[in-house]
Length: 360
Image 1 (cartoon, rainbow, N blue to C red):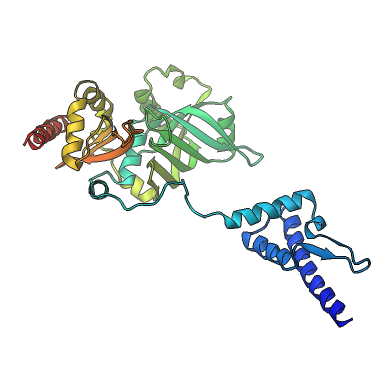
Image 2 (image 1 turned 90 degrees about the vertical axis):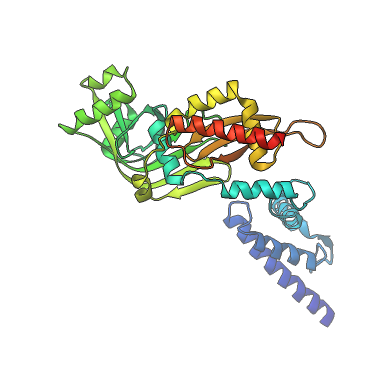
């Protein structure tokens, strides 16, 4: 009798634990509220050896039969998840970086580069004039639209919107909005973009003409700006800024830092400089990378250029003889190149220095 009492007490304790687990599952809509709860429930289930004794008949049945199929699936997934290694796992054995890799990583860490605020400010200034605006619909949900913009002298976007557009109607009711601007040749996650969030309000009276002129300067063919049913809007305040310059280069920028920053003077010519180098002098770029970092490249394509250096996408020969997927490297200038002529002279100098070093 005492033995049966002990067994029943053990069963009752584990049923209570199972009930707690089921409550957590039910409360979270069929999924575990935390992995800790899942582990606790699984341990409780294991402690009775996955069986449940029916006191009335003495019949034994699988403990899992207490759960529905969906609940058993949740338990199974949680148990499996608990056994899986956590973090980034790609199946490759871990190894220490080689001396060459360490040298490249050190160079990348110390290579001169624009501040996040300068890069974001330049992106807005020299963008192609198109952006994605997100406004707040009266029902509380955001709505997106591709729109034309022009920067004012502070880097705040100016817009000309038709009164018939839904985003215009949204802004007239609620000025809260955000604008996302991408680099001109945006192709994917490795390319830069910035999101400005704040208030976008209608510009009225005599100020409107000033901003119309700025908009026409950016978009010379936007004759419809002067139509009576088009209104001028401007971002009048910035609350927060999210900038992504590519992989492993992202930051939240304070509005104060953004407004104090100036657009980089070289970035407005970057496309032309990069295009010329990539079409006519790609071997020179490969030599510069080899000289600066000791890295022999199969390909080297300049992506961006600024007064402090350039971003280059390179590919290298791998151990199996194949060519790697292109990856991004920063190549710094030995000294600042403040304009287009300065960049040209700097690239000539770096090419000559690389040729001398590699032939020695």
